[in-house]
Length: 206
Length: 301
Image: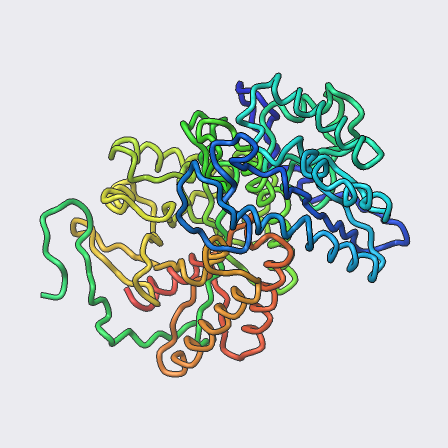
């Protein structure tokens, strides 16, 4: 029922629970579990100032606007900064006011650049999942580079937030190596690198 | 001269059609509108590096190297066959409507319980190709071979051979000829150019076309639809107009769905709302495309 491929990476599973999902009893017999996730990326995106060949130019409010590749895009940088400077605190206030706990997908370098915010996350009862060392496409890394980035992310997030992350979520999608590396590294209880189900699922021992 | 005369390959264009005078259709139960819900079953047959394709489908990240597996995108598709399929089936059962599945053969081979469930619950199957592929990239012989493979595979996985055909996006100049040559097909849906089925001729053989729609189609969540309400509103507006016209000239309304898109809960609720809305009117016939084609054979041949 699954596709066997000789190529590296996880085998696809197009069937999953096959129409028979487990009957879940959430705490308090809740009918739905809602996971609010805040992606903490601002400060770790592609930026000329960080040695990248170009600055991240999308995924914010402005429509596409032509810009020379090698030049800093200060407008784009600024729109990102709004997130860590203003958006972060607004969302925290809303969560407090409505008394909900959320999960932060946090990029290590972004937290290093906003240390008070980093401390505030767990202090206010929220959860931290590693969203990578930087907000980067891991498929562009070699296996060894990716392993190194995972190790650096763990150490950095442990330092900035006070606890090591036990969950992992890549930017957009994992490489064919990510899940293996996360298991090899150890200390992770889950990853979120899937969009293919309404419920968690156990991939079993690997 | 109402049709375009040309000497290039493929069907002649017909930019006139019913010429403002569509036939007066009497749908079963004197319905004012025939609604054809179509579920595109593609997941598992899309372009994928793991299936030997040089590149996968276009994902959300333009920077993603085309030759590498895009596990996020694979996963987004898998949601359709794992979860969306079952959600849509449950909605159709709850509201008691029968639909048509445009099914890619390889996708069904990779989810055999689902394949059996389609006809098992009374839905219709139209072949959507061997894989979800651009047939225009195939030679005529390759395309013929893929048509044959699709027929055999779908017959095996669903228990019946398909009698309708719909390509990914659009046919090649050869597709309709190949379908007629192959035989056993009573219609194809490779047209977007009318509100009613119509007859055409392929080398002297009469052939039925049941046109489809990319307007009332959840694929627009990839471009123009934002909220599920956009989709629901478009469907309701489309229905309102055709229902009004149907007082004198009943029409057909095709609705395109994708399990990985409409199968997500928020959008599925929009679809549910639309079906309930349409069912609140008298004279509405939810029909499979097979039923609509049969009606045309019986009353408009």
